[in-house]
Length: 82
Image (tube, rainbow, N blue to C red; front, top):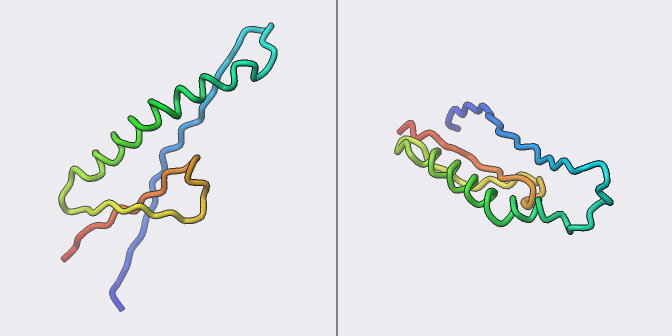
């Protein structure tokens, strides 16, 4: 069995929207969150994956480990030692 070493590195983005005191709840259908979902989330995912693929000694894999895929991007970055 080959020797395996592992470490983890996390990037966590907390999404926050603040409104005036007279705001009546989610009457806008969470439009601010939809704006993140339809644009920034895609751009962020593309930037992170591009950065991780930039070094040819590493291979980037999707690595779902049970978290909600709508809320978490789980990746595995493997170093090619051989």
